[in-house]
Image (cartoon, rainbow, N blue to C red; front, side, top):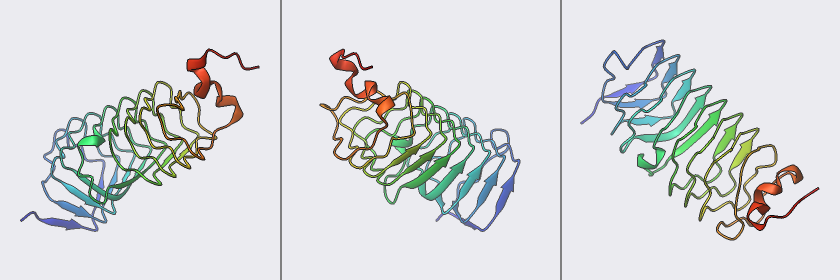
Length: 189
């Protein structure tokens, strides 16, 4: 059985050179830590906060993120689709998530605020009631994605085909309508 590490603060630790302990982490804070290319497989994070951390290219096979927040973190190229989907709940503020994948995940009510989500894979993802506040979604892929009541009003750069996605009651700004109608080659003025 894995050790449980509770209520600890990890500050400015470079886990890409120091070994990260295989354990379950509960109510922990990670501040200014580097997990770049670190294998976080089979590790559980429960009610943990990551602030100013670099998790670029970390391995997330069966990793559990249960009520975890990421603030101003670098999360480039992460395969969240390989995480343990049971009780998966995350939020992101001011994060770089470019080239990451959320393929086929259920992320109802997920919050993205002031995030870069360039070329992120949202194929077959359930984003019901998700909120994308001031996010850049340039090149993000939405295909067979559930976007029911999803709020994209303050975000930019997305292209979403209404015929291949569920968009009922999705909220967008009028300035982003070209991203919904691009396949029809309509000129909007």
